[in-house]
Length: 126
Image (cartoon, helix red, strand yellow):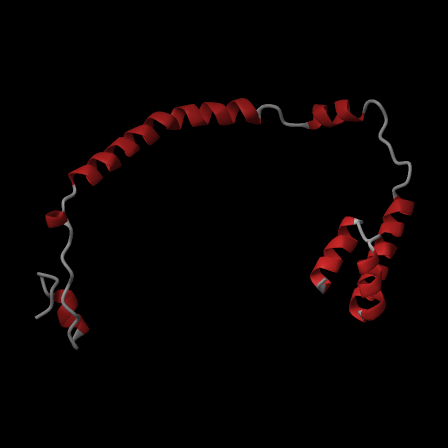
């Protein structure tokens, strides 16, 4: 097993396999990683043990939520929908009407005089 596979197992909590412990005995970096993961789990377990919100917690959170955004967002989306559909139709019509003849031709390479190339009315350089 590679170090990344071992570290994935250590992070997911499935480090009880014999190949994991054998790798940890050989690899110093992975054993340090295992110690850090164990220490972090111990700290989180001790710090947040038996923390449970009271029965009215969900009601207090719901009371502080801005419930007006949902209907406003739906209203705005419905207002923009016809314009979006019209734009889609125009773009579809333009792509259907485009032919290889209407595509711009490949421009000639720019001249050594960039100002003359820009000022040329045909746009193809001289």
